[in-house]
Length: 352
Ligand code: DAH
Image: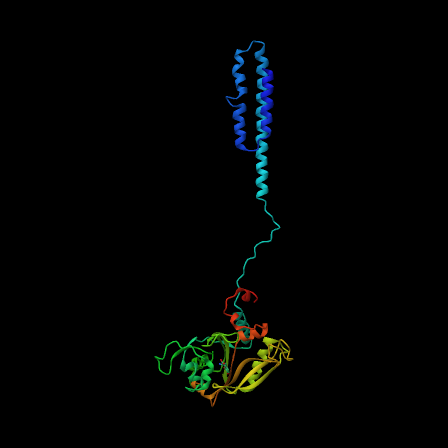
């Protein structure tokens, strides 16, 4: 009997060693200390033993039961600890892993440049005047002294909105910001028709031209128009203002020059160049070896245009210009294809 008990204890403890999970532990408990286990069989057989044997075997069986139960408890704890250790390892957080970068939004490079231009002009005392993008032929051309069949219209390949229903005054997308000059002058003049106030404004906005899209020409682009009207405004005011602008935009040492040009709405007309800031005037691919980069058109407001705006050209004079922020950016960053601006390619946009 005692040998059998020792055998039961030995095999039970041995099989317990190999157990690693909860289900097997339960099965072991049923098999070794459960109601129909061999150990329990010994307890129920105690009654058949002699008076001398009974206490000896009873005590031994009890000892084995306590031993098996405490071994089970110990093993159960070990299995639990092992499971915990495993899940800790699996759920371990690697705090040295770099975080995911938050993608910050930003302004479009054209908008950034437009704002730089406007900030400089605001510092110089210009007020912002925004004008419409959808215009009439009258405002975009006729009031700006383009005669009906003037060849200069060909330079401004136009998107027409209505196809000819309005005779010689069709609706179109503005090809430049210059029609805003007429709107602005009329608005200012209306405040005091006999004695119109002086004007010093900058007119930013999108322009549209019906062109083949190439590396050099786009169907939409921004312009910033400037308009100054008053008594005794001269070409010297124009020059002083635009040279100062160029210094603020491109650096105090940026050299500039004016070349005679032609626009129907100014007389005289000019184009302004800045010294190429890539080669500093030596000549390179960006300035096509001329050393100079054209940045704007300008001139003294044509008397007919002043008249159309409600300003008497005998009393008032003025100057105006039109410049392109995208063009300035292309020159500054050597961007060789204007199509990048509206191509919506993040690889381009994220650089600004
Ligand atoms: N409107 C002209 C263009 O788009 C630019 C321009 C030239 C505007 C001379 C002006 C100016 O106000 O005086 O090509």
